[in-house]
Amino acid sequence: MLFGSLKQDLLVFIFLTFLNHVRDIKDPEHPYSLEELKVITEDAIEVDDNSSYVRVTFTPTVEHCSMATVIGLCLRVKLMRSLPQRYKVDIRVAPGTHATESAVNKQLNDKERVAAALENPNLVDMVDECLAPSYA
Image (cartoon, rainbow, N blue to C red; front, side, top):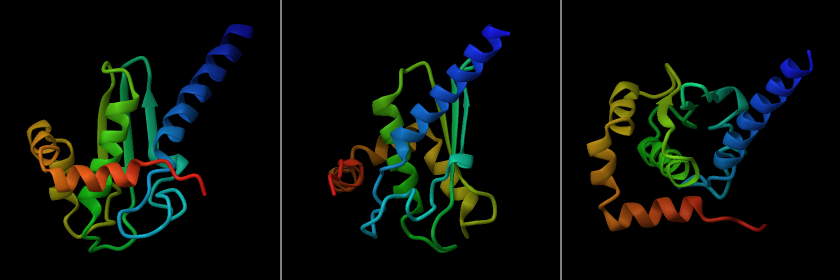
């Protein structure tokens, strides 16, 4: 019985750790975090530690959000920088919440496209600004 309780506590700890990695990412267009804008919620994060798999599903603020790929890239970069390399990270737009959902999902989960995006210094600066800690 105690083992089951410890295992449950460990899973909760792992989940909260993942949530804490992404909750303070700032929106590229607004002076608020993704969590404050409800772009990221607790329900949007799935963690399977046994399979080393994480899925983050985010909800853009509007259906035609021009920053959806930047937001997704911020999520991916933050997790790439924070997590052990054993984790496979899957970043998704919530179904039905963006006009070009499938194109955004494809871009965010294609290693070559992500690598190419991270070669763009202006885009890297924007991502770094969104990931910078705020002490307000």
